[in-house]
Each structure stands twice: as C-alpha cells, then as structure tokens.
Image (cartoon, rainbow, N blue to C red):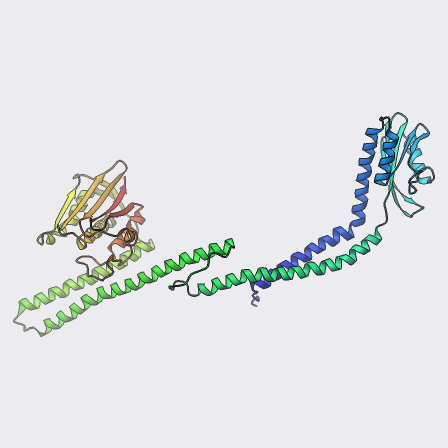
Length: 459
C-alpha cells in the first residue's frame, strides 16, 4: 500500500500543530496539574531559607524587629523559646499564626525540646482555615529553640482560573501555529516549487536558478543546480560534437572504400597498376576505420578502469625511438623528429600504455605542427621523476581551451578537419592513461607560440 505524499506546506502545518500541542500539554501538566505540589515544595524551601536567615541574625541587638519584618514580609509565623519561656512570638500581629493555641503545634514543640533535637519539620492542619501548615524547628543555642511555620494557602480557585485561561491560550497558540505555518510554508514551498520547475529543464540554455532567496540551504542548492546545469550544457555540446566528428570520421573512409571498390570493379583486368592502387586506398581506409574503432574501445576501457596495469622495467629511450621509427615515412616530406635524452633511461611502468600515450602525443604534434615541421621529444631525468615532453611549434592553444583539449574530439577551431594521423581521441586516451597510472600530466601553450605536452613518471 502506497503512502500518501504530503506537500511541504502540509508537513510544516502538521509539525507546528504537533509542537504546539506538546507545548500546551507540558504547560497544562506543570502549570495546572502539578501546581499544588510545586507550590508546597516552594514554600518548604522558602521556610528553610528563612530559618537559616533568622539563625544568623539572632545575636543582633535588634533581632526582634528583624524577626518582625521577616514575619510580615514573608507571611510566616516565628516563635523563639528560651528554656520554657517564649522570648518572642509574631502570633500577636499575624492572625493566621498558631502556636500555643494549637495542640498539634504545642505537641511538636514539646517533643522537639524534650528530645533536644537539632532540626525537625512537620505538616499539620490549621483548624481555623482548614488548610495545611508547615512547621519547622531548629536548636540555635543551649536551651534556645526557634520555630517557624507557614500556611499553605488553598489555590483551587487559582487552578480553576488558570484552566479557563488555558482554553483561550490553547486556541490562540494553535491559531498562531496555523498562521505561521502558512506564511512559512508559502515562502519555502514557493522557492522549492520554482526550483523544481526549473530543474525539469536543467541543462537547457537560459535556465537559471535563483540563489538570492535569503534562505541558506535553498541558495546553496540553487548554486549547485546552476553549476550542474552549466556542466550538463557543456556535456551536451561535447556530445553533439562527438557524434558529428565520429560520423564524419566514419563517413569519409566508408565513402572512399565504396568509391574505390566500384572503380576497381570497373577497371579493365589488364590495368593491374590502377586496380592495385585503388585496392591500396581501400586497405588504407579500412585500417583507418579499424584504428578508430580500436581507439574508441581502448578509451572506453580506460575510462571504465577495466584495463589491467602491467608494470615492467624497460628503457624509455628505446621505447621513444621505436615509436618515432613508425613515422619514418614523414621524413621524406620534410618532417624532423628530435629526441633529447640519455640513451639509458630505465623506468618501471606499463610498457603498452606508455607506448600508446607517447604515440598519441606525437600524433597530435604532427597534426598541429608548425611550418618548421619539427617535433621535439625531451626525456628529463629529475630527482624523483622522469619527465617526458612532446613539443611542437604550431599555432598554440588559447588559455581558455587548455582544460578542454583533453575531451574527446575537442578542436580549438571548432571546424572539423580530418587528422593527418590519429583518430581524434588521442588526448583523451593520454588523459585516462595518466590517471590510471597515477602520473602528473599537463600542457603548456601560448597562442601562436607552439605547445608542450608533458607527463612525469614516478621513480
């Protein structure tokens, strides 16, 4: 069975009403139900404080006036007994006082004096007013005893008054809870509903989340959604570019394969040279398609972290020279490959992954090479790392594009141009390889001044 979903306005209203009801319940319990108990406890503590105060001031010359003031100001009755003689009593001025005229009090005092008690207290009933009276005794010197009693006034009428007031207080508090919850939920739910509506169009251009609502959590959420929307817009743009570029790279060789296959079919069997030339182009474009598919599969494996890392020890200089040898055909077109390194640079790494990464960096340098047609590979032995740099003197990269060039098929000029070598995902493979191997990598470039790609192998 599905639970019914409630809006934030309903939940705020329910929570505030529950909170108000619990608050009113506590008020009822402590202010009405326990009022008699609380009042009696309060008078008991007050009696103890007064007794200690009287004891401290007994030795003063004018103690009787002090006792009189205490009696009148605190509505208590005081009696001082020295031996069997009453030295002071406030009962003459306070009609509620009862000492010698009450048998229970008289019995309490006689028992206290006979037993030579230090401190004692008792609770008796005042027959004149039919209410409780608390009495306390204390021995303050030899044969000197201090007795204090106070009447606990009936507060039933006060409780009835509080109960009648409580009904109005409860109605007012519940009404205020409803009003507050309405305005609170209206403000909060309006902002959240607004965020929710915009979130349905997240990633689309022009969608902006208001992050100036003066509510911290909503402003932080709006800022996060704005950043997410921006990233999704970039991702969507890259996706469209990727599809366009992959489609272009697939369409061109397929078109060439079809055209040259048809041409080879129509060529006279005696024209063997022309037929072999067309077949060579078909093979070349097929290889290009194979390379593209393999690179995309390799990138997918790297990004999914499903490629195993196989660490071996090998000579990095030998690896670089073997990679450069694959581009020997370009030397006939005036390309130059310069390796600056010692002949013996031993490293521990994944040979195949490093080979593919360096190959892709050289490919990239060839595609964006300068007029001098020079590609430089530096292998620098530092204290803790081996730094590999691949340098070209081409057009360079704008500073705003430096973080984007590692994306699949990202091109600075935004116009699709078929790479001389490679498939357009080379730098993405380099990035994923470096991340998997845990190597520091990057690019240094200035527009119009060439580019340096680098990575550092940990020793």
